[in-house]
Image 1 (cartoon, rainbow, N blue to C red):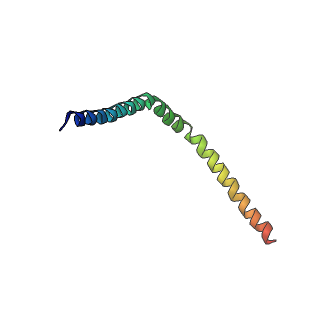
Image 2 (cartoon, rainbow, N blue to C red):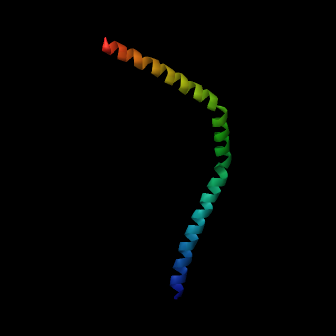
Image 3 (cartoon, rainbow, N blue to C red):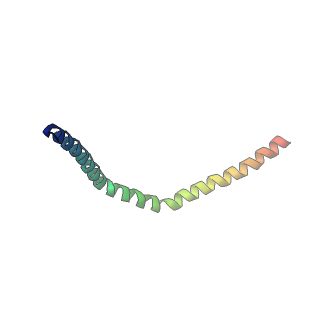
Amino acid sequence: MPITDIAVVCVIISAFAIFAAVLAWGDYQTRDIAQASRERAARDANVVRLKQNAASANAARIVPEKTKASAA
């Protein structure tokens, strides 16, 4: 294998290795952000469920009234 081919292959492999290192570094830097986001979502989950249930209950009450009005 000629020296130039070896150099090209080494450059390509180095580019992939640098890309993998950058991705690993970014993942390491954002782990705390993701953990805090999951904790915040778990803490606020009850509030979100109550709002969703209230909206669903209101929607359920509105739909029969509309059908009664349209039938009359």
